[in-house]
Image 1 (tube, helix red, strand yellow):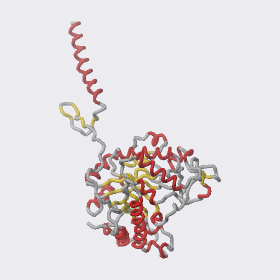
Image 2 (spheres, helix red, strand yellow; image 1 turned 135 degrees about the vertical axis):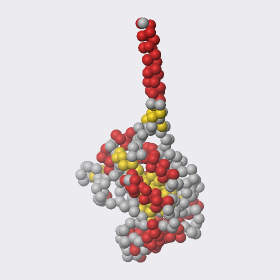
Image 3 (cartoon, helix red, strand yellow; image 1 turned 90 degrees about the vertical axis):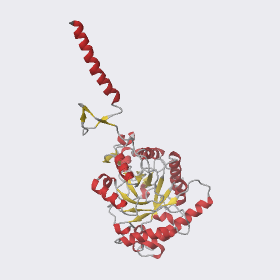
Image 4 (cartoon, helix red, strand yellow; image 1 turned 180 degrees about the horizontal axis):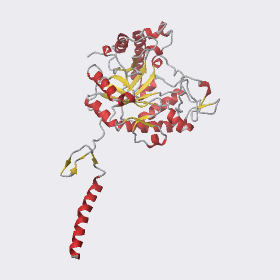
Length: 391
């Protein structure tokens, strides 16, 4: 009897122990789908999908609209944008992954983002989002703000622009704080975020606020790393070069002030368009007519003249890009892809006025082939009039 009990005990142990070992061995590879039906008393297991890859055959010319991560995370808003792109000449979307607040809007694997409480998960499943857009053959651009970063400034005030008058972190006219553009630690923090973004299948990363502050009490600014002797343009150029060195194979685009197309100095913010041509695949001047001062090319209110403002700016940008290419042996074949105005400021922007900007951008590039790569439209509300676009 004792021998039978021993055999029975051993049999039970082997059966249940084996099951335990099987489950233990496979938990790293499998996860239970609670909705899956059971077969023979055992739940079906499903294997997680791998992260999406960039589009295998991306569009040769990008025509994009902008969306916040809030819009991308809202099913009804996302479907509206997908339908808009799918039914018009559009083929791309720009989505915030790190916006003006400094928050990263998805579950990132970058430890510093969590350490600094800079993660606010608005997009619950970034892989599913990219995969959904790629299924529609939509080119997906991740937008990230660089040196305007209130969250990082809160966590790492030692890296932030300081206020000489208060001894605290400096804030611009909107109450937003900035990081020292010469801090390599700031550069590396953002590059880690970009690497994580690229691992989720984004086709391109678009950098905004890649400059020194432009408004507020600039005279009160103090920089923990910049010695204020080295030209601001050299600081920003060094960052551009470092970015390209660290991300040699990534598709990168740079947002510049529209004025950078016609101004040969750095406007006090460190942006010179030729420096961007040197390091980025696409250079995106924000040639919003409403952002030009009264008197620009003799216009009382530039916002009323969308074609004229964009044409003049892009003519100059194209000319400067052509000269740059002919004068250098750089392997970086940068192209222009402007941001255009799709919002009311300075004037009520009708579909015709938006379309006039698109026409101006293309006509500026007609004399020199291969220097323009489409356009991107900016609407803070993420609402776009279908009448702007060709079917």
